[in-house]
Image (spheres, one colour):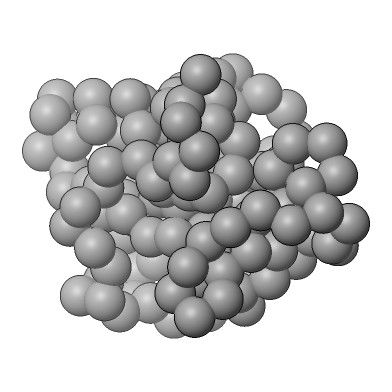
Length: 151
């Protein structure tokens, strides 16, 4: 029996992790998990790869938790090489209606006029998985987006 062919959207820059499974560009399943990215991603993708043929992975390449960005990028880049799955990147702002994204302490990443900066005392936007995706609109540059220098 042939596995269904799907695309994945992974929002890994904050907790909870959100993973969307898309068939024919429509969201068919959502996985929402609390916990550490390093522990969640392998378990979730083990199940996904057993049931689906994954064509593309779109991941939130930043800004957000630097550790989550690094871990996600390495994990997804490994899948791209080992399983021939195309890795694409998207700014986290695409999945929260351009709302502030938690940085460190009481600072948040904000995007105004195409420029990402840090501001204090903002409330964080809520991340969501779109009901439909157009895989062509995502960036083939999947390199992590570090607004500040990574540690």
